[in-house]
Length: 184
Image 1 (cartoon, rainbow, N blue to C red):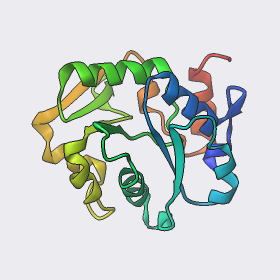
Image 2: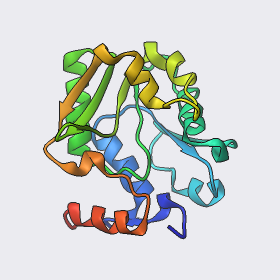
Image 3: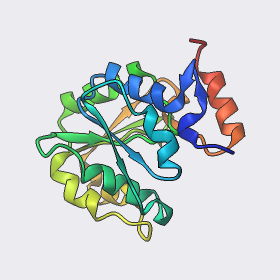
Image 4: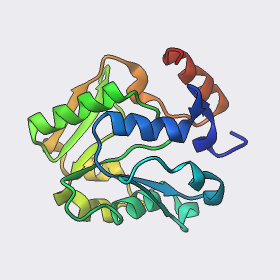
């Protein structure tokens, strides 16, 4: 992308700031932002709430599972679960709220949004699965391995938008995603 994805312009602010706001509006309690590449440039944008903090993953070059583990290991021990969302996966707060509410209603260990039969993000895992999340690796399927291992315990929530499938991995993905979101 030519710059940290977290600092891409998104609806009048950086993508990171927008994601933090979206999570807060959706009712997420604590938000742990995991920083990696160019952490010192991104860290100043992690602000705005006492329920928000950052940790630096010094092993980010070894893959995204290291960031997931860095985040999970820094969650408040009293947390009931974790919603895992990459900064390059923008989701409106209303959608996040619907996924959270579906998770709470169903009470399954894992909740994942889907669109037209395809699983998207963000998944939610109960705290009893934190050890399984800490065991993921790049050599296996990462988060998918936990879902495979607990396949009968996954609550799939059908979303009404392809937004749950967005992942901004290229400039083209970024431009296409901007078209799916209305102007601020």
